[in-house]
Image (cartoon, rainbow, N blue to C red; front, side, top):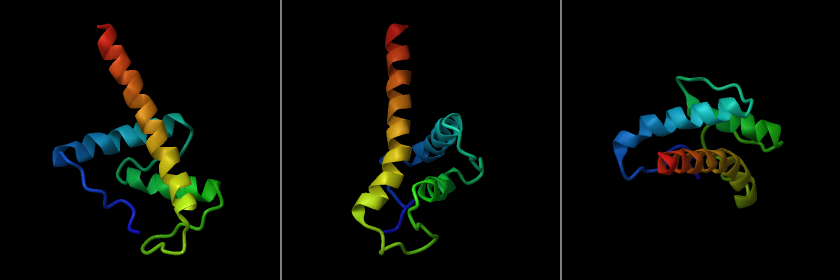
Length: 90
């Protein structure tokens, strides 16, 4: 499973999504490299004692991969919901 190679339906959304990821994870207390926000997955994995490394990670279980992606994606979704609710109030 190659992480970070997800296809986005709107390619122009890649940069704003990376910025959202960086902002959300920074707010959660993670050290985020603004130039490489996708690298936050390694910090999340380390925190959860999951042996994620660069390149091929076929040894990971789907549960382990889900814990990494779920932590990041779940926080991003929560933030997007907050943003949508704020827009609806306007």
